[in-house]
Length: 265
Ligand SMILES: [Zn+2]
Image (tube, rainbow, N blue to C red):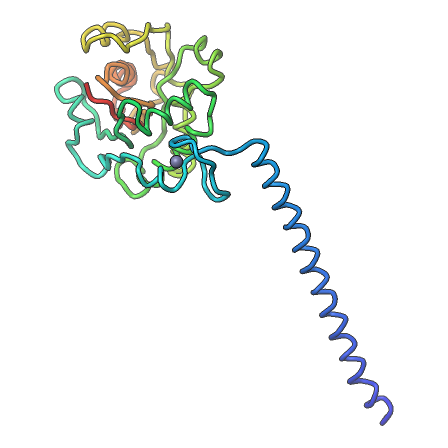
């Protein structure tokens, strides 16, 4: 018995030492693995540098799309917080909407233009998701935006979508949907024909250009629903108005508008 008592503490000590060694081994393995992983990430960053879409500087590991300075400089409108804001005023006397807001001001050569240019012409789809998610975070507690039943992106003509590889409004809508947990319905609204570019047209020409190019596919599906209509930019609102007119063929449908940029004319 005495012998057993003498051995027992040694045995517990042995178990304790063994446990310590195992933990130390686990920590060193984890440390080694993370060090190798970090070297690998740094190597990839050296070969394929991640560049800020705003200023072109290399991004730090925790930065996404924009560096902290550019993120801080984003020209936010905060219009979602104000009823009767300038985006809503575009539609006054033209068509009834619930609410409307844009995330950023659009300045020529500014940050917003660079971000949208990357999304539309440089195949940087992730820039749209990034913008959508960021806007979703801002809208999270803003009624009625966060209470909508579905999100509908402004459709692109199928030929244009094939050429670009995706619809930029749909990508933004997905980003917003991820945060607000509102489903995206991208097969309800159809673009019947491709419109010519709106850039050099005045307000009336823009309206005539898109007046009848949209149609809502399933009549009745949108009845009594609150829809968030999403587009990349709002200027004169002609495209959005044409979309709302085709949605309004469903009785009781309500529409709110969300765009990433607001470009005033
Ligand atoms: Zn930057």
